[in-house]
Length: 286
Picture: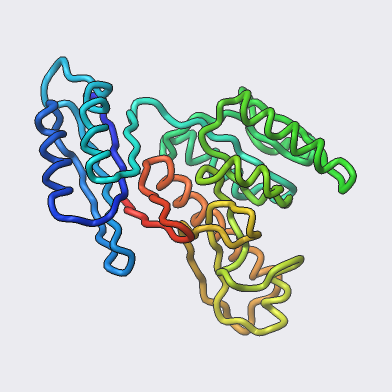
């Protein structure tokens, strides 16, 4: 199969953008396989995602990038052009609850998530995950206390850089990243929050929900920012609760929601389907 690539862009909305982009892609010898666009009438911004492949031999993605740069400048675009033949490198962070980690690894192993697992970082020892198949995967135990938080985060950042991670996933990693690290990982760090934000925060959220007699529980996947649990939302989902459900039943249902919400968010990011728009996102789901 010919090498596929994806182009994403955002810019002030004006006539002629689609024609200019599709025309250049065609002129450089590529055929469009998938195209999505969104005109935000409220902000006056335009967003677009295009997936394409060579239509003939001897066409180069690098040449298309060189030709696209002047067009992007003319339309004041923020853009990215990436080959889908090179999977993104993902660092997964986890604490005691490992259900999201298990799900991500399963989806990766069956080919559902096109990524390279650059490493797993846990603040619990490897023995805590002995029931998981981690063979061949770099595993790093970085314990943390209130007194060692700065040193632990410095070691974490060093691991992320050494692994050349394109994306960091907080798979129920129960540590708050500092403002500095959140800034360094802007737009490439996804967290799963055990609530349909806004909702019950702090410890034992499902027990809080049970005490309040909620009828819906949910989960939210969002990009990490310095504002705790307030980053741009990528995906959310909910599930109905019965009056007869116990706190343990809510925990079980919550795990299921968290797994699927995080998996969708990670998959969409890996496929360049999520475009940032300030505190919001534009998502072109597949």
